[in-house]
View 1 (tube, rainbow, N blue to C red):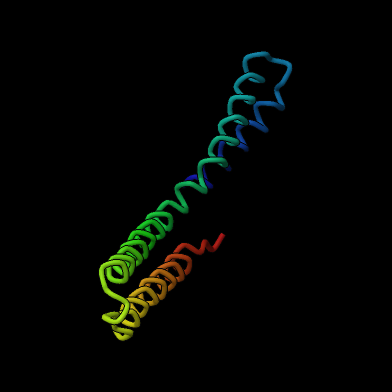
View 2: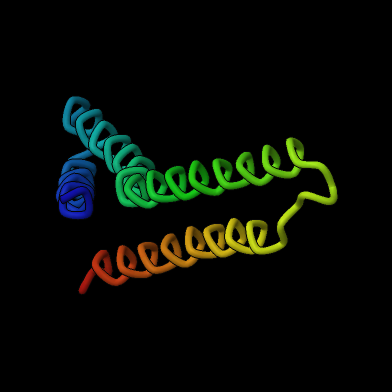
Length: 115
């Protein structure tokens, strides 16, 4: 939608600037050009917003696991540390990364534009 809007405004700006001898049409053309610039600037935000949310969720899970590990190590005596528990937390951490990577790739595949 934003690409179509940018195309329409760009075409309108070009046409209106062709009639530059009339002041109000030239001003309208410059407004359209400014709108194209604005749309071009905000389009990536909306295109990537869902991916940013996925990244924030993955970071939340990642830091929660980090805190779990810190808590476990900090609250356990050295001789009571269980390597299998640490390995399990690491496995969960890797699962978070793998899930995020798969979601990222799925989003990228779905968002590919034929244009």
